[in-house]
Figure 1 (cartoon, rainbow, N blue to C red):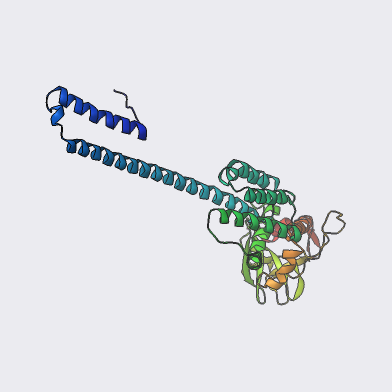
Figure 2 (figure 1 turned 60 degrees about the vertical axis):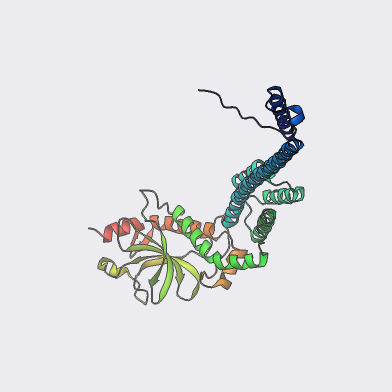
Length: 358
């Protein structure tokens, strides 16, 4: 197969070649006696020159238009890639804000993207310096979770996103006050999810040897509708470990509840209003005794539907999932050894095995 040659002719070369071609035609025409030299009309030369000039002007315009279109296409491709790179970086930044914590791994990923991508496409030295400084501030907040540090993290996130958004001409800017109000609204949902995730981890529900199924947050009638974190037992359908409010008392409790149809446990039920509860219940709002590493915070009323009551958890008790899950596991471990039953001292597994024989 023959080779293809891509020859690009410049303006000067085009002019020289065209003039030479016309002169060559004249010479050949005269030498071949096609036209006598003295008979060569002047208007022929004029028309040839006009054609030459017209052709050159057309060539120059077309060449200029082609170059302009190529540059425009190149600029569009660069802008599209730049927007894509910036959006990926913003997603990484926003993921950190969703977690409301920056770890060494997430910080390492951010700085990698900054050096490999952002610095290539951001040619504004001022913006580069601002973003670099905000990343440095975020690096100083690694593994810090208190509210003041969270506010600083949010400030850096906002600053970086606003600078990148401005650079690609999107125009929109994040308002810190509006963002804080939105955070107040979604905080209860995020806290609920974090609590359930941490409780599942502590109860090891994903292990085949665990006594409990994966937990959920549900509304159950207990003299009135209450919201509980519930963990149904794998072996005994209708038996659930419940964690939630107790009447009007300002704390959380943990108790086993049994479906009313399980008559074998009727003698162990609460004889008052709370018929589903069986045997003893324990306050998990209270600190673990004799544990010097335990956070001694007393957990106040937990009402996910009340934004005002959520503020203490959003601003002060930000480690509630860790505190509560640890206390639940501690109390459950005690019940595994001793779950009071009349004069007997049975663990809760022994208790259900004894009274729910199949």
